[in-house]
Image (cartoon, rainbow, N blue to C red; front, side, top):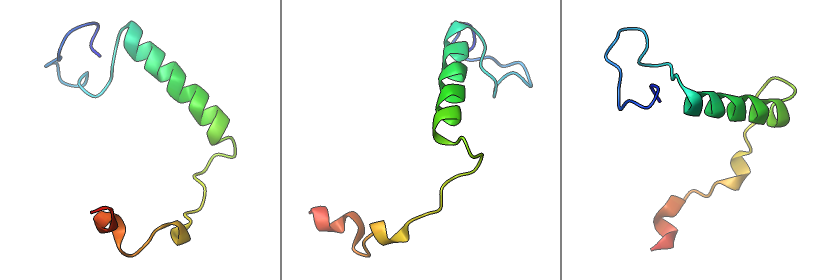
Length: 59
């Protein structure tokens, strides 16, 4: 997301997007954070949702 370019080799700009698409992604992230993390922290993990067998039971 470097203003339409594939990459940007300038030091310090690689990890930050720029341009219209990067702005849209930033707005979506901000809206989702406001909606789902309104209290400011991640919800607690519910480890009862996981099975010990993992994905091996799919095969």
